[in-house]
Length: 175
Image 1 (spheres, rainbow, N blue to C red):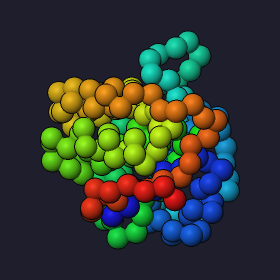
Image 2 (cartoon, one colour):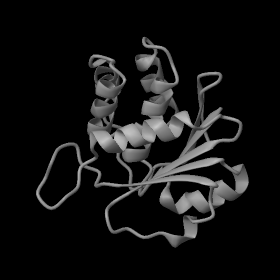
Image 3 (tube, rainbow, N blue to C red):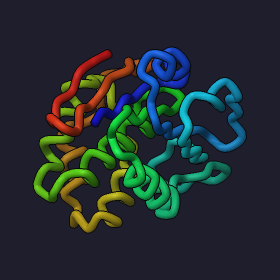
Image 4 (cartoon, rainbow, N blue to C red):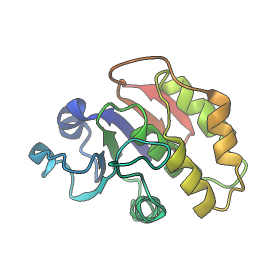
């Protein structure tokens, strides 16, 4: 039961190599990437900007977006990987992987998942608005927010490196 997280430019190769059953694409409104149309039989395509609060001219992630990703992830049986990507593989995609890991775990594992995320992805800076919306939907009473705040901002980078989180063993590894 593996989540694979990557920047957009690595998705085609990872999809060919790992044959994910599900793909979550997180892109800015108006971004078009026709190369991913055959990357997975089940795909969720969400469009919002990578922002932590509302800003004029930009589209923030909404509760409906996070509810859609939680429902989509719940439909994944884990037999083949679920591949998650955003533009750089640093913020939207890492937040989504963290949210899915927490949703698939009983309450009380949020800090451990944040630490595993940091170990697997030193550059990860999970989008705090996505995490906050998920924390509310999953009724975690701020625990997810505090766990992500505790790992802090990731190392500076232009592009994150692909990594995986193994939900069955609760392990993490770089790809």
